[in-house]
Image (cartoon, rainbow over all chains, first blue to last red; front, top):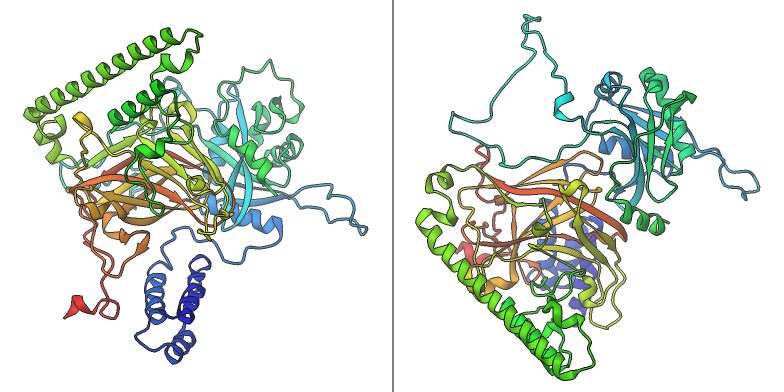
Length: 280
Length: 314
């Protein structure tokens, strides 16, 4: 292999990371310079083949040009992680613009939240005696940008206290309310795995904020209270890692009795601290 | 293999010298991830008493170390004979110790689960530190001992050794299942056709690699891979990858002659992260299973092209 073709091969090697597809002009140039049966041409054919095979295999594609505005990026990120398409994104606060002198930091950080109607209903049904937790921050990578989100969730209800919802049968005669289609072809089919899956408490809402401290998140909770009036009665515990640790805050200034002791720490505590240091 | 390891390590304590553990592994290749490198947080297992005792009396030291060395050897031998006995007894019950009708009718099998520390011992964690890079990766049990958390930092700063121009990868590979006397065993997944993973990631694309049993020596550098895209977010994600989608690669390069992954002798599975984006990452895995998807009828997803491989089409 001549040095020229080796160099051209190495140049062709760079595209695998960027997702660039080789095109007709490159092919024409390569044929003119190296010939149809040369190694660069072979590499070109291989690149065309494999890149076209892997172009659309990502089930959760992220657009190549990420928005610069942090609010837009937060909206994109929240829509990315929430599988429910009927969820509503609310921008509680946009980042205030910098002063003309450019010295001071923005006084308020952006807060963007997302909640789906199912989550709203679940929060309305939630028992006020059990506290709910604001956990975070968790990292989400969109291509090469990392954003952090917080979630509002409750602990798992022990099986004794779980109430089973009974749907009355056939209140709608036009189509069935409950459709129990089994995947198997017969009684002998069993596609279930012989393991108890990890069960975690329900998630009620998610948000992405510019700052990870309790003040910003408290503003998010207050914003959430407008759409979820039941939230006012429920004690909210902030389980923030990397900042002030465990703190109890009750929403809307209601006097709550002494809080239950923190049960378990977030296991991602260690690495989120590292993330906080590693985040630019 | 571990016996040889213990022998070598035991002998170096007696000689009071230090031999790197790399010397104990005959097949260490720079390009493909190696099974012999111990995980970054678990040190080499030496007889416990020997390493902690630093008495002044040299003779007493030698005796105590020798006693524990013998004990370790005896324990190891007993363990191997127990495994041999289990194997012989299990042969009468059925394949892998379960009755035959259970194996034949099985349509979904959990292969690796993460419910305790002993489940973590079945995995090896590597990063580009072996070639001099700066990525770190750790594996520990997740919340409530119900999942495994693989976390760390990826750094694509190339090692300045004049040989590697790119760097930045982290991998978690399962150990090859061993039978009595450290014979290599393999998994037989011929009745299944889809790999099922319940994971929770952070949006990074991972690569799943499957290696076949290395009774043919060329297979040590061959593997079948596919991509696993994580969504990120607090919800658990089910990833189903049919085995027909895995493409073949040898020595780290995708080859022109592609063939489907044959499932009768699988030796290990691995997850690699090498997406050239620096920063922290994590991946929580609940369990890994295989199941037979009746809706998936594809045998192999990639056809060979006559341009790249004219010999196949003569």
